[in-house]
Length: 38
Figure (cartoon, rainbow, N blue to C red):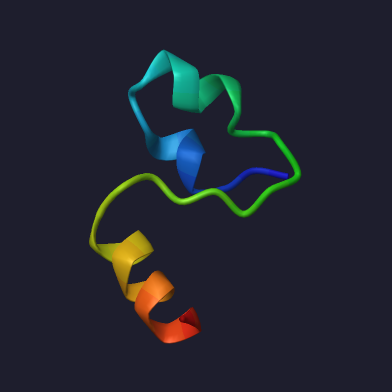
């Protein structure tokens, strides 16, 4: 399951890019989703 983390440069985020979780890196997209779901 690839997700948004696969496009990141952080080794830590890349390590978790294939986890079965819909991860978002910190940024406008994550904040917008948080606003719509809260």
